[in-house]
Length: 207
Length: 321
Image 1 (cartoon, each protein chain N blue to C red):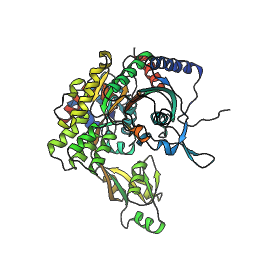
Image 2 (image 1 turned 120 degrees about the horizontal axis):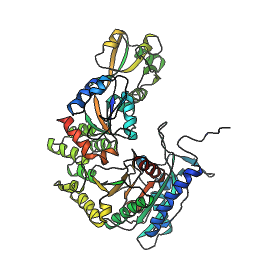
Image 3 (image 1 turned 90 degrees about the vertical axis):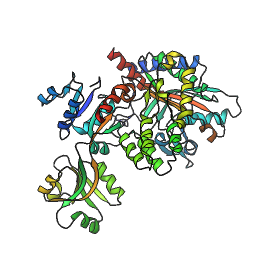
Image 4 (image 1 turned 120 degrees about the vertical axis):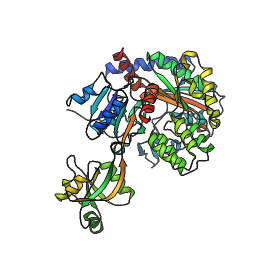
């Protein structure tokens, strides 16, 4: 796109990101047709997990990228420019526990600490630090909802769009930590050396 | 037997050392030709001495106690030690003073990010030469040194550390909004910048201007601004561009949003980019108030390039050609 290499997130943001690229005049037909292929040199696109996008962009392997604010918050130390809020992929980072009496609050009151499972250990740790509560953060890779049901933890910090998964697992949202949408990010060197191309993309994204 | 070394440090073996040495020698010859005398300072300094400078993100990370309980630090840059050296050893010497160095410095790393705890810097400090002439001289030496290494496609971003803070002051943006706005700019977050500007009680027009200015970067036309509070900084940058040779001016990207971590910069700042590398390979700027903190108030300017990153950029350019 404009001679730029773009890091494209697979997963929840994939469809709307491809729609956006279509509007920017990038031919995404090949990407849509290929589920396994990762690198599309003609279109200048590389596809990856959303959490890998900042890694590729920071290193300059991609000039610009699209990923969720949740990823950027979790990897806050990445040296990338955050250029625009793309206003899709909206979701909330929440603290959720089992329905009924809040077991996390009870643990905090009686044991002085609550155990929290999450895929976002840094966001969770910062949040509890900021709100002055002691929490033992348990990092899990798979379904976070399982952890409180199996008795591993009292609560979870996770991303939710509709809340349906939480509800199905008998969990309720206790606190909202942050809101997240898709963001356009850029490598700091590309931002200077390819300023024209990047600003042109930015203008068309906003149009 | 495998014996580990700390992450972020490494051994250099002869093949690589030969190439690094060639880069250092090319730069040294350039510095020498421009009249910069090489100095060496201790890796360990008293913490109380280095703390006279505002290093912000670039502050020393490694501290130890000496036998009498004094706190020592491993230096995190060379500019502050040379400021100390000038005040101590050149207290009465006539300005300008020209020094160069090839020295390691040490900073904290973030785990598993391939960052260097220990890195080799090649740089100069030009002490007692005010803006814009002194800045233009430093920029000229910077480009001559990079040319000497054989790097082809590098560019030098040039901005002014005082530009955005002065702009905020002119719009009457005071603490705490001012700090929050500068934080968003420092972390390169324009979405956050827009949010904080929106919350600062500015008119929509002023907020839009404050959001637009730090995104302005490119050729000399970037300096054609009608924003009155920017006039001084922009005139300063334009003057540097006029003082340097055309081939140096052609390397410059004017960048009204440029900011660099050490807090001691007061005026023009530089950052060196190469398309073969995703991170800057060096930088510097004016620090007209730092020497005063050590008791020898003199305007000064300097830069350092990261020798290992120059090497990476050179090998990257080779691969691309």
